[in-house]
Length: 254
Image (cartoon, rainbow, N blue to C red; front, top):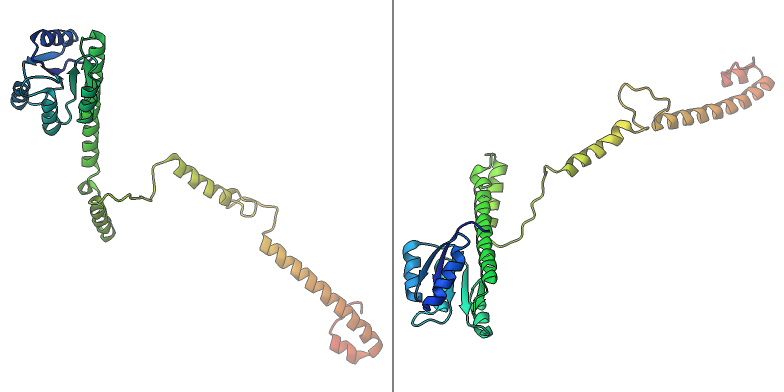
């Protein structure tokens, strides 16, 4: 059973009006019943919004569609259920097009009435909750609540204020408190700490850095070439005497 609600019942047929009032009162709702559309509009103006309006379509002077139009203009959050005669499909479709939440057919089906009224009341509560949450979010994240008075932040405020006046779609890019943000930071830092080419500070490593290995290889190659050249020079010096030895400057094997 739904929470008690204030429901306005409008019907110029006394028997139908009393029956509808009884059906809704069984669920604990506070029901106010009036006999025509003009009285219904006066009641709406005097007593403020109702949680729902249940009105017959065909009534003398001011009918249910006129009541619907007034509610749609002055209290658009209030669902209106219009009662139609059995088989009057055209009237029901017209009512939906003009903003009625739903319609109820005569003769009355008690369970169907309670179901559609309950659905209309839940729709109103959800709409009210949605408006409340949006209002709280706007207040919480209003520009005046943002901390920062630097020149850069002032430019951000100006840009946000200009964009807010348009219907443009905006992409906001920046850091976010997401688990993925921390995982990206961890994965980017891990190779530098544990890479075989860059061991952690203070840790022993049995492998030489790549630059050092390349330097050692080039040094060894140059030394070998020098030894080969020197040996050739020395062989010539042995056969050429002391002058050749002075030019060579090597004493290997001497």
